[in-house]
Image (cartoon, rainbow, N blue to C red; front, side, top):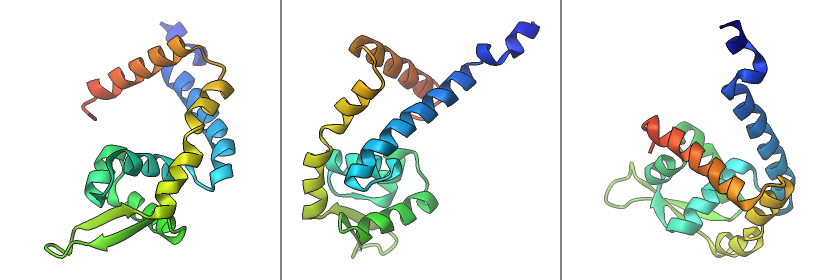
Amino acid sequence: MDDLLKLDKQLCFSVYVLHREIMQQYRAILEEIDLTYPQYITMMALWENGEQTVNQLGSKLFLDNGTLTPLLKRLEAKALLTRTRSKSDERVVKIKLTKQGLMLKEKASCIPMQIFQTLNLEYDDMVQLKSLADKIVNNSGKR
């Protein structure tokens, strides 16, 4: 049973180290388009789904409003999106990409392949890793 307390036996430690490695690779690549990783996933959700509310975006990204609002303000300051209050309900804030935000998608289109290459993964391994990660997230009730 003591063997289970060894660091190299811990799933959480392997996932932690993997997370750090992936984020380090993203950080270097995302510097080229002046985005942080949270900003990048926000832009991806907007590129994929178009205009949406802050709450819709937060649900997709698993981020609360307290985290998302400052992030959106920074993206708005970079002229990548606009935030407008709904006329029918002022509590609802709609997020829409600007022309500049839409154009950034083209620059970012090479990022997934760059990450894939920097991690030196076979495609099948990446698919398997993502499938296992999705299974854990789905089983925890997050999706």
